[in-house]
Image (cartoon, rainbow, N blue to C red; front, side, top):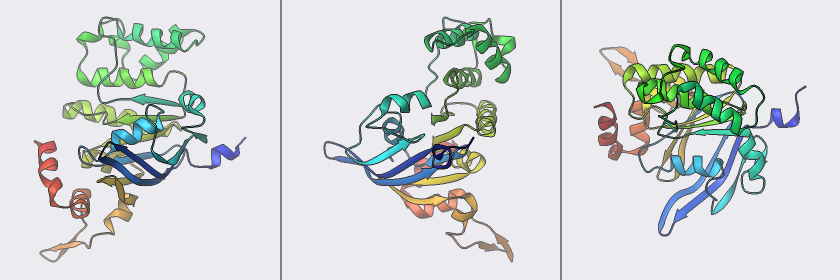
Length: 265
C-alpha cells in the first residue's frame, strides 16, 4: 500500500547553509529528489557536493535550513535517517585482508541480519563477483572493489543511497561497470543521489541534474531542460544541440574549464 511518505520526495533540501569559519561553503541550497530516481549533483572541486552529502547522511550539522531523507529530518530524527540510507564515499571502504564474501558476511552480521551467508551470496551474484568471492580483496581491480563497496552498502536494503564521486580514479572500463550498477539500483526502486565532477557521468546516469557552483544551485532539471538554457549552435547549417559540458561551462564561467580539461586528461 502506498503511504504518504512514499508520495513525498525521497530527499528534500531547503535553504541549506554551511560555513567553516570564514569560508561559506553552502549559501542556501534547495532541491528535491523523487523516489526511485537518480539525481546528480554536479560541480567542480570545492563546490560543496561532499558537504551536502555529509549533512544528508547525518555526519555534519547544517548552520541553517532543513533537510529530510525518506521523510525524516536529518537533524531531529538522525537515527531513522541512518536506518534509511547508505553512503559510499570516494574511496572503497573494504577490508583488503578479507575475501569479498567475508566482507559482505561481516557487514550482514553487524546489521544483525538472518542468514548473512545467503545475503552475501545473493549480492555476489547480483554484482557479478561470484567467481572472485573467495579471493582477498587486495587482488581485486578498481572496478571490482567499487562494485563490492556498493554491494556492502546495500545490505539492509536502504531506500536511499548516496554515492559521493563513486568513479574517481577508475579506468574507463571500471567506470562503465559502476554506471551499470547505478542504473540497476534505480531500476529496483532505490533512490540514488550521485555527486560527480564528470559531465559525461551525469549525462549518462541522471534523471535530473543540479549544478552546484559557489555554494548555490544555479540550475536544476532534466538534461533536456538544461539544454534549453542555451540556444543550439549552428554548424554548416546543421543544428547542433548544446552538450552538458557547454551548459556547465556557460553557467559556472570559464574558471571551470581548466578543471574540466583536467578531468578528461
